[in-house]
Length: 142
Length: 466
Image (cartoon, rainbow over all chains, first blue to last red; front, side):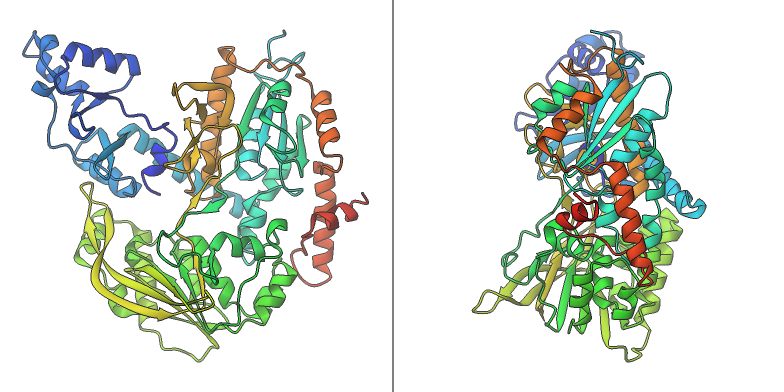
């Protein structure tokens, strides 16, 4: 199972922000879409960073003028990206180990979606539940 | 209009597709008592169970026993089955909107992904799904022809479907005769002159999608020796590190089984099954008559993507393999349904957690849903569709609570049945199906087989005296 199966039921949604947008607007987007991170993309649509709730909290704790800052000022660069064919188990492992909560998914340089650790956990749970159910049905002859 | 979901006005749901997902969804819809639901399930074929009947290999009867659970769902008084009724042809989306509050698509992934290489459409090169449908007696594929007079067949892919195809090609007549394989397929396969069957994996043994019981079974075939190249099942440093880190016992075991095959000596069985790794077909080459005679393969090496997943990339080494029959089993895609938004990237209905989305606004289309492979793509085992269906059904109940359902003009079971009867007078009900099922099992008992399937639709209707 690969992470394409997560993107397939998310309607190709990836919420993006421009690096020069104010944090105020970015927070509005996070709240409006009820998500934990936005991908910062350049004009060509290539991901250049990621802005998470945590980035904002970290900055706000020491700087009350955070609302007026730009996304590029506090976003995380050097983003690890996934490809749609990456398998679920490896991605789950890497995200847990490196404490990544949002993974932008890129295909041929183009941002095609985002996978959250919540998506991964839920998909893994469904996978195990499904396997368990199949085995139980066979063993119990239900 | 009365609030849908009450005894006075049950929530009327149409499920398109009678495969496992359709049943799991029906179960989730009916097995609760807050909302009164009536389910009508439609399938374009007269028979239910989808891929459990027509995909799961005939020599894997135990997996098919899941149908007992489906029959329990179907016994619910507010469940009906209309077999032989095709969405988009016999019943349109507009028809369904006039009779149901909610429509749920569970149509699966009905077509193969292509390899995307030159020569793919030469004669003798087929999608694996066509072969599977043929040997399982799918009414649409009884006329399919496969040239089993050739010496070598290659199955591209190492998923469980690829393994099924390779195994069926290697089975002896005696082994197949004890299954519910279609009679014509049994005859054709008994006359098969294939001596060598290849399975080709583009990555290494640790990344192969097949599961351990399947690969073990390949080492226990009555009429075929298994052969694996030692150098291809020796783990490369990246795979070794990945396996060590994940501590996944199933993968470790899988590699051990394959390494065991690499040191086996042939025992002189009539056929040989060869499992290859780290190779990808790059071209099929034909003779003057347009029939495949050769395959060009490139050797791959693995590299780690930023997330640590191992993917193949071609090296400069290539080789040629003479071959007369090719089956591609490199993934599956859903087929678009008339009037239903489709996501071309993934070959699924455009959806968010099962809610069908409008392609322009990306907002939910009221009253339309998807579940199973047509929602998330072809992954997981049969049971994976149960939590998947539950997720969609939860969306359906949430939307009902918000009043976001269709407002059908004829929201009653009798009008829906009258419409179906008018369009398809010979539809097959669940009672009819259970009768057919009994007849098939009785025909099988006489021959010591689990069942002998009815193949032609006319044959089924005749058995039901229509």
